[in-house]
Length: 80
Length: 80
Length: 147
Length: 147
Image 1: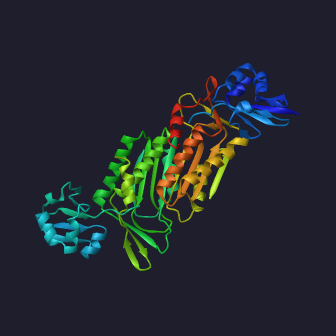
Image 2 (image 1 turned 90 degrees about the horizontal axis):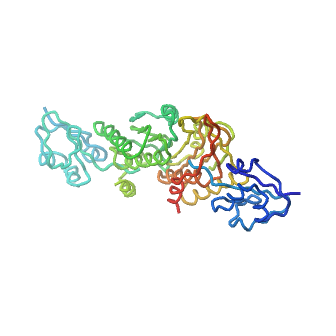
Image 3 (image 1 turned 135 degrees about the vertical axis):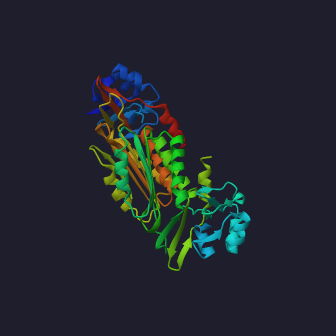
């Protein structure tokens, strides 16, 4: 199995896709290495969050995604 | 002709009537002397206002009502 | 669009708010407050009296103040007079604006002033007769927020 | 009464607010905010995307926060997702309470959080294609009012 990575909002444009599958297990370094470079650059910004298995990580660098997990990359939400 | 005096809200209960006619011209002292004593007592309170000819008086003791004028005695409005 | 009214009869807020919203195309949002006669124990009816030469002109002055203070596209301000049953709407204020904070702020502002600075006197009918409703200190504190 | 929804289709706020108001008998008032797609020059449509595992649970947490902070009898919170045309409602928040300040405050609170702390991403279609809408500094300032 794999880890499903979802690119939300404008990150999907940067990634050129809405999602990609990566081999499990996946940690922060593995994620940064595997996503397109433009997305990796965004991920290093504090205002971009990461959710794993339906929960936003307080510290995204602690990411540990196992087989079958879904990771969502969450850029800042749009204004009103 | 006369000056019409209207008792608004709870002042109508105190006056025993919704309105009374008083001889013109009418000033503050004349008003206090002519209305029922219970109403006169209320009128001396700062929170009771007086309108004459459709305008609330900034200083009710300056009242000068001429023939045909309408005076409204305005107790505090009710809360929400 | 500006619509300020005293209504002697029962009204259905939705029938006012729908056309009001339609009359302000291009707006970002509309905030509405509807106040109803609260179903408190023993209260059968509420009567609102007013003083015609002051009450409606006072509501128009209040609307002027709201348009000065907030960037509004429209303001609807409707207040009942007469005898109301429990659950009937007493007041409806609706503000349309390009930005939500202006719309919400204008409704808050108008409601505080209608509750403690508009010329309405209320009494409620309980099983032992009519009782005048006194001013509330809370309403005057609310009003001071806008000084 | 608590009614929290994400809607993929056009909705008419009045059809939600009427039943919501009826479902909260005895309340003193209801405050409602409806946000619409603003008719700005050149904007043809707005698309809202969300992340299902977070967005609706986040709205429920927001409702929990509103019930903790304000004395509410009911809260309706409805947000559109999908493609919207100019003039269509995006969001409707309605709060019923015994006292007006709680109802108005709850709507203000929920709207500030929905605008800058809920998981929605928006892009607008202009004649030259789709454009993502960026975060606004003003929204973050608005949110800080509740800290």
